[in-house]
Image 1 (spheres, helix red, strand yellow):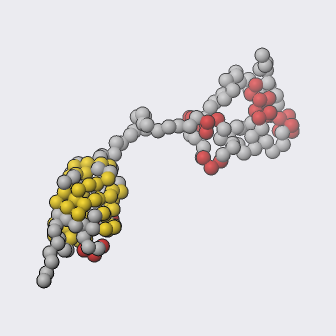
Image 2: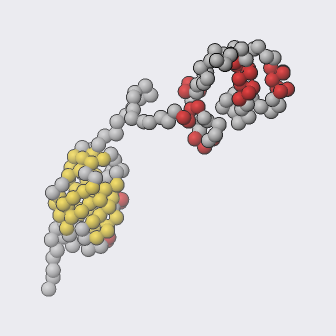
Image 3: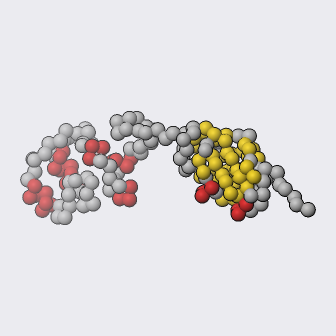
Amino acid sequence: MSHTRKPPLVTGISPNEGIAWTKVTIRGENLGTGPTDLIGLTICGHNCLLTAEWMSASKIVCRVGQAKNDKGDIIVTTKSGGKGTSTVSFKLLKPEKIGILDQSAVWVDEINYYDMRTDRNKGMPPLSLRPANPLGIDINKGKIPQKELETLFPGKSADFTSENFSAAWYLIENHSTARLV
């Protein structure tokens, strides 16, 4: 006696929207008897079979690929049950392109720009983002001869982005006439 199975029925997808290559979990009934029984899987008209991972007769995990349709059904095809139907749909979001001058929702931790010497693994911000005058005091360069500073601080530098940075050299070189109030 031959027992035919019912066709696949997709009843849920999580998340139900996302950009291309979003990992989704598909839920339903009769989604196959095993990995080899799954012979077709499309989301928004895109073939997702290559990324499909059959988990059980009620669960498949895959990645949504590039699709022409912005919104579409999830269609599962199995050897044992044929082509299925879907009671839910997936919405493919288009990633927003952001130009160099456009605002974006990116948090910039300002502390990294002022304490760059302590954590070299974070990288260096562009020169335009480095503070020109981090102390906010008028800069008076050239009052102390460079040779004297090199003698006072051998192997050191007044460049605050250098590993050999010397705060004393920087203050003497740039703020020797400043008065503390």
